[in-house]
Length: 165
Image (cartoon, rainbow, N blue to C red; front, side, top):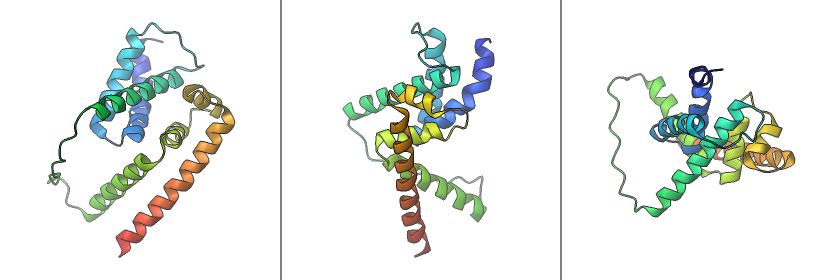
């Protein structure tokens, strides 16, 4: 399989995983691009049994590296977001808002739970592969995934109650 075929097949999955991890579409774009650069140029041996799991492991490591770099920088005050003039439908705005709340809720999860959840949401990865990516046992992956789902559900229910007020 050529590199371009690998990219075509897995780029969307890697981007989705990076978005789950970071909650930032721009960072997810960067992580996706860097993942494929590392996969193309990397000299390390593949320690997992599928290309997809290997790419997810690279993306996760790059995300962890970016968090470490971000911790060393002084953050600036966030600028207010400008509204998107292209969409005016209430439904589209509501869906974007819900997605933003969901991504924020995912970001609030402990790192181990968030990683397990983001990887488990991909239907192609088995628990054994996720365990290999995270460097833990299959049982630990299952526990982390379950806890992440419970925490996420509680946070989203809390947000929904706030919306209805």
